[in-house]
Image 1 (cartoon, rainbow, N blue to C red):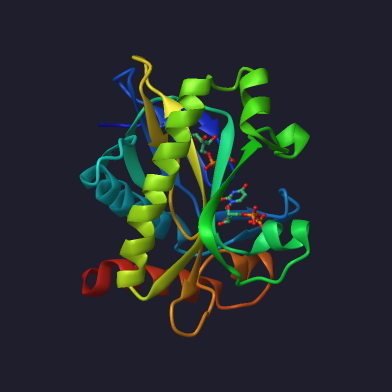
Image 2: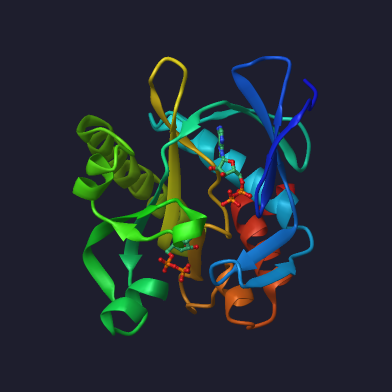
Length: 238
Ligand code: ADP
Ligand code: UDP
């Protein structure tokens, strides 16, 4: 399968049409942005790591009954996915306080919640992805009540599967962002990516940050953290 016309170039990926109108090719870049697009940079090797890790995790989720857009890995950076119409919501699941949650509610990072939390942002760069609740999402026509219910259930299932998986790799899954999409026949599936760009990963023993926070917060060791996460997931296969 080959890339045809460029459909969309985002901050971290390019999306191409293919000969099959139901399939797209996503191509992962090394470009990184943070702080609502204000901070820009490059993380060398990130594209290949995020592509391979996201595909691995989507396959793991499929095995556990979560339907995803993953079809086939073409190369280090390119993957065939099912074309969906993206539900314009960023779904964030949190197991431990960090990032905006800690800022917004004035608490320290690292509080382990009794139950995971879920929140939604309206995926809209012009409005800076404002936080909204499920009633707002339904009122704005972003998704139906049934779709929101499904998205919530799927997101918590993803959390259960990934939390356990990462713990087996000596990594604490702190929080993450998911995107969902609707196929031509109306099925809601998991889309976009799951990677150190979209998750917070802490070493389970030392608490060392192994994700994009090292870039956001100018901590150094960004490439090393992405590579270390790759090793934890793929072991000796890298
Ligand atoms: P952004 O748009 O936030 O800059 P990216 O650079 O990651 O993000 O661009 C990838 C774009 O492709 C995102 O807008 C994402 O919602 C969209 N996307 C992800 N998976 C699919 C899919 N299966 N079908 C259609 N669009 C998708
Ligand atoms: N996240 C993301 N894309 C976004 C915003 C957040 O992938 O546009 C992820 C982020 O990596 C983290 C989780 O969602 O794992 C929660 O992020 P938070 O709301 O704390 O915001 P951040 O501090 O990451 O901007």
